Length: 233
Image (tube, rainbow, N blue to C red):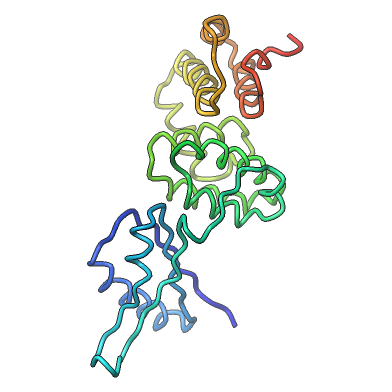
């Protein structure tokens, strides 16, 4: 039987949703005649507990309508920081990023997922990219995710990539794109907890070759030491 999945990213408790969720589900069923399933994704344990409470309408012992969201949060989704594990179950790795994508583990989670997305077809990867981007509430984690996606450059047909390119075009100057890649390379290293010496920083900031900076940004995703950016050069 086909189902219509309704995915809702929820940052905090919102009692208004206990009225809007039943409405959305009823509307979708009436419109598409396909059973809808509400999936609530959150990075907060408290929000997960709130969202898990059934929504009931009717008499206390005779409910005319009951809505039970399927809640996915930090307490029932595993943390996946290993690249091989992420490749074995990409959808689960996506959920791991969506529910645990903040705090000190965010970098490892997002890096493993970014690597795993390269092993699946581009269309599916594009959908997952948007799901993760929409659920990352932490500004630093969201920026890191976009940096990773820009550095890997495998999802350029995706609207998120179009947004990145449009932002670059608005700058209107090669200098702006160069500075962006310089900052992105150093930011990826910083997020991964890799020390950046003054020598490395100065070399990256002195480079004006966009292609070279792109290559360094890609190396930054997997480098164990900042000096590996310049390996073989």
